Image (cartoon, rainbow over all chains, first blue to last red; front, side, top):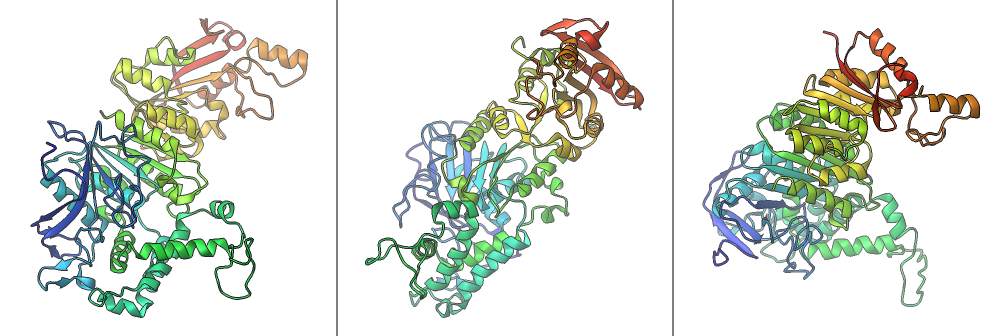
Length: 377
Length: 198
């Protein structure tokens, strides 16, 4: 099995498709970059699909090729962790529309031989899920032991049993929601407008010049990053502390517009480092997919209807300081699952770190996910 | 099931195998786990405390964090064979509403509660002149979660007025079962099995 070229780190496959997108377009071929960890057992019953967030990627537990940083969820995935390659066959794929090797605006449109840019079809969360299902077909996995994701990954995780009721036995949905609210859409629109206001964006056709709209994308990232943190967390980490300068180690107010405050410097750094690893057009497409997400809307306006056909077990986790996808959003999913009679566990955990808490050290979250997954083994 | 708290052991004994239950205020899921393991019961739980929920979920149980006063309303009618409320009635803001929901979502309901008319409680108040602090009610007046103390006779008249049928009643004193006679004085703890009037 280990010799199988389909399995391992840094895999890529071009599937003929076509994939019928929610927008009506037939996408072909469908490029998917992915990684697998662990060994698929003989009856292919130990597969866990991990779904990444907006700016995440397939490197869930391996070093990022650009930044060299450890995988984005090594606290959850790895030997001795709740999701363990010793027991599980773990699959993580770059989502459709992203820029780490899967089909997206930065990949080549076979019809033109040039990057898609803004001619790439608008996609939805459900399209991402359908592309993942195509990948599972390719890997020989009919049914998932579990699908697990946080934030936008949670949107995919909660969509999985709704879209493929027979193909998933359990779903773990962390710090997520069944729909984007007006406030969620509003923040994303700020980000998109920042990208599109950058003259270097050129209607999305910036690939040839090799000069992307870095300033616009950095501002988009700065605005979004604020929503991932809590007010209390920001106060604890930065307060009103001033940024050190060569001549003033304690910092000083400049009576100008330098990054006087540490929080300004931090956000600028977040913005600048983001543009090195992310494509501005992908940011537009994926935020759009999230804004379109409304699982109830896909099922006649009743969220419970999304879950009537599935026998999957569900586990939801929210964090008390997450104001991007607050606990009430998780509760709405829980209530719908109860109404549908689905087995569901839910806990709101306490953390000072806001939405980002699910990516950080959270022993209680690990304990819950571990127990939930083991109950299905 | 011998490790169960005595009131839970009584409930566990009388739940029919293979049924569907909702344990409201399920704590760390001890009763649910026992029912799942010994009676193939499909158990769901509702619990306020996040630490307890984490403990219950980590033993493989389906438990959601929530408040009986608020979240019971979200469960569909008659979706369980039994709804169970153990040592939680007296902590509810509106025990009457909680009980209504209990008998709405469950075809039958088990309710257990500490008896505030137990002789030790009576003596404590009568002689001490202070709010009683006993083995089953260990908190003081200001930090107790028990905001609606109830006696066995109160409960009987409450369900009687509402036409709720009592299909079983068990009493405990010092963790041992005790008789029905003068239970309102001699029982520290009561377990009732109820059914809504048709």
